[in-house]
Length: 250
Ligand code: SF4
Image (cartoon, rainbow, N blue to C red):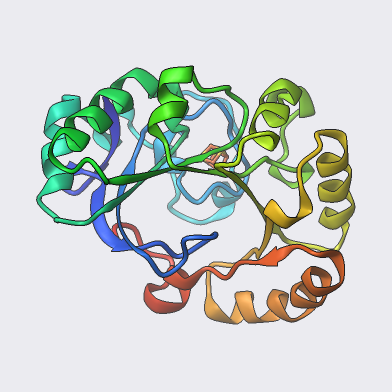
């Protein structure tokens, strides 16, 4: 499988889940390299914004920022080896994130099978952009989906970022939770429209303030809390940002 590289190894690390319904739970994170989207504000652009790709990114304006050399930010590893690395943490939960993990469904399924042979109760969450329908075998192996459909603010054509069939599939899954990053009040109407169009239940929707610092999160949280209270959504914080800041590998 192709994972993001962190230092000399793959991006696999033991931390706590900082967002969504499992917030606060100890978990091992494993980050897939490669994504089928190219969100302009993506904070894991090392998984897809490679030299030679045409996609714009917010960081283009930051002095010294350059697209990533694909080989330098990719770590290829056998599924069984990734599983063994995860098992060393003796943690009962793994979050498969990315990039877009569903692009490498077969490899992750192999990894899951390997871990479950040793820890049958191990729980797996998958963080996905919600554009791909998982296979029945993959679906059966997963305990929880954290779906983050992308809005207009990701600066991509709707046909690329929204797959109606996939959203309808996840809306009907009892394992799926939908998480939207909200940067401005105008995002809310779009979320409401999307949920209505795909029968996404409000009680399974989490709104999360956009922000890469505690100050940013605070600024957006106050008004977003009122939106959640009045609209029946859940509010999600970004606990890892508050604890460790905008750092990789924690
Ligand atoms: S879908 Fe996720 S990983 Fe892919 S570009 Fe968007 S934010 Fe980044």
